[in-house]
Structure formats: C-alpha cells, structure tokens
Length: 412
Ligand SMILES: NC(=O)c1ccc[n+]([C@@H]2O[C@H](COP(=O)([O-])OP(=O)(O)OC[C@H]3O[C@@H](n4cnc5c(N)ncnc54)[C@H](O)[C@@H]3O)[C@@H](O)[C@H]2O)c1
Image (cartoon, rainbow, N blue to C red; front, side, top):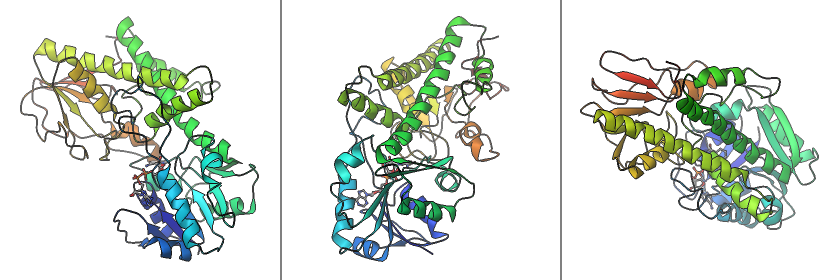
C-alpha cells in the first residue's frame, strides 16, 4: 500500500484520489472545504509529510471569457494561469523538510511550461513527473481506471526509476491494460493538449459537413460521417464522428484558445487553433439562426434543452448550448434553458408552459456510449403539443403533436 497525497481535490482530483484510495492510503488537501468518505482530507503540512507520492491537481485557469461558452476567437490569445501550481510546488518544498518526495503534476499546461516555469522552483531533492490525464467530466472514475493511455513525462524522456514506479502504482488501480507513453515533459504536455485539439478539429470537421448538408440538400450528414468513420485505413477511429453540438467543456475549447497564444508566442506563422475555434463559433451561429428561423416562422419561443456542456453533469463552463444561446439572442430572440442540473441558473426555467422550439442539446447515449450501454436523455420538462424539437443528433422521432427536425439531414 502506497502513501499518496493529492493537492487540489476538485472536479478531477477528488474522484481520482478516491479511485486511488480503493487500494492505497490517500490524503487530500484543498484551499476550499472538501469532504470524502475514503480520502483523508487534511492540512498541507500533514499531507506533505505523510505522503511519499504527491499528485498536484490544482486549476490552471484561463482568464474570464476564455472558456468557449461565449465567442472568444476575436480576443487576444493568452496562456493559462499558473499561480496554483506554483503555490503547490512551494508548499511541497516548505513542508517536505528536505525529505525526497515523488511529485506528479496532473494539471494541464501548454508545451514547455514545466521546464520553463516549474522545475526551477522545485527543490532538487524531489523527483518530478508530468502526468496529465485524459479524463472527462461525468465519467472521471471510469476514465481513471480505463484510460486509453497513461502519459508520463520525465526530464529527458527516458523511463526513469520513478516513472517505472508510477507505472507500477497505476497497475494497481487499472481495470484495463493501457498503453504507457513515456516522453519528455514537453512531449507529454504536447500529447495531452494536442489530443484535445485533435478532438476539437474532428468535431469541427463533422459539423462542417452538417453545415454543407443544410445548404446543399439531399444529404444526411450521418451517411457521410458514418462512411468516413468506418474508413479506419486512413482517417482513424469512429469516436467524435457524429455531427451534433460542438466540442465543449472545461478543457477542449480553452486548450485551443490557449494554443492560439502558443502559436503566436513561437511565431508558427499560422493559427490553426483560431480556425478551429472560429469554425466552432460559426457552426453554433448557424444552428442558432436555424432555431430563430423556426421560431419566427411558427411564432414560438426558443428553449435550449440542456445548458450544462453535456448530460449528467452540472458544469456550464465551456458549454456549446450557451454559445448557441448567445447567437440566438444576438439575432434578437430571447432564449431560455431547461436543465435540472445546470450550475449556472441564468435564464434557466423549470417548466415551459406552451409549445416552443426546443434545441435537443443533450444526448446521453451518444455522449457516454463508450462506457457501455446507456439510456436516452429523458425530457427535462413537459414538451407541449405544437412544439418543434430541433435534434442535432438525429435520433428522436416525431410523435403526436410534436415535430422533430433532424438538423443535418436534408435528404427528404
Ligand atoms: N476536470 C477534468 O475533467 C480535467 C481533465 C483533465 C485535466 N484537467 C486539469 O486538471 C486541473 C484541475 O482541474 P479540475 O477540473 O479538477 O479543476 P477544479 O477547479 O475543479 O479543481 C481544482 C481544485 O484545486 C483547488 N485549489 C486551487 N488552488 C489551490 C492551491 N493553491 N492549493 C490547493 N488547492 C487549490 C480548488 O479549490 C479546487 O478544488 C486543471 O489543470 C485541468 O485543466 C481537468
């Protein structure tokens, strides 16, 4: 049994610490009050002195307005904030009393940051690994024990002793048999963040096909994307190959937004990330204008069904629903949301009294299908007869008094 400490037990850190606590002695420290049945929440002095491994999962936030929930591709690119990571490193130095610790940074940072900003601060008595997670909200514990790969960064990219020890530690908690990818800190920062931007680009491409389907006609976007998804010789696997809502959440949009800064900083000469983010915004605008057209033609209000960035979670950060809502309002039409979980109550209503144009933003079957069989999203409120549901996932069927429009299918 290993002695493990987590500095930062928020959305990512707490669940990960609890998975580790099924097999190990785990402590957690956070600047905000936190509770857990299995992780011992303690002060920083105890955490550092009693733990051999110290995982850092503190935030690396972007500035206000840079999360992707409102347009930002026109704004000055910026790096993430590193104050919390620097604070955590300083606290490890302060409370370790010269005893060597195995320090593992999980927080997402841009390539080059660890070497430039963090290593110089850490007391050389400690051993350091950069180990970002490919974890999504709503399935943190499952993702932690079933990762596609574990990314471990060392100074020179070799499998050092402590990197091998970390692999042995992970083997005690894994349900699958993941790849272990070992590289330099900088390579591992790159693996993490370019993994995310590949997903954003992929979603941007399939949603682009959806835009063309609407303009050209006689095209069901699914026929096109399913054929591409099955083209594993050249194009890769089928995930994120269903056109629908845009890429969203606390990580992907902001990673792209931050990479815009990196592209400028290193004078790459072009900004692919800006293009991906700009496309995402225009795709949201196109969907918003489609809703507005439906609403005006039928004299109905617009309701977005699902405000959080995906089903089953409360987080509205980086939400594509609110980005669509932004453009609905920009077109001069009010918008409300229904979502029993949403952590941002602005414009959220519990019930919708009459018929409306609903955007079916959430589809939990599609979002979580990789974790096993999933139930469909159930209505969050009564959908009155006379309503129109715009389904960007093309799964619902029309019923008595309710018309479903499959956004992206213009075949018939
Ligand atoms: N949430 C995810 O799914 C996810 C996935 C992969 C990577 N990440 C990355 O992991 C990091 C943490 O993300 P999160 O979603 O858990 O953020 P979060 O804000 O939910 O949690 C961070 C926690 O750290 C605490 N904290 C802040 N400053 C601190 C300090 N100086 N000392 C101790 N605790 C401090 C906060 O109170 C909070 O509880 C970020 O870099 C994020 O990009 C998150």
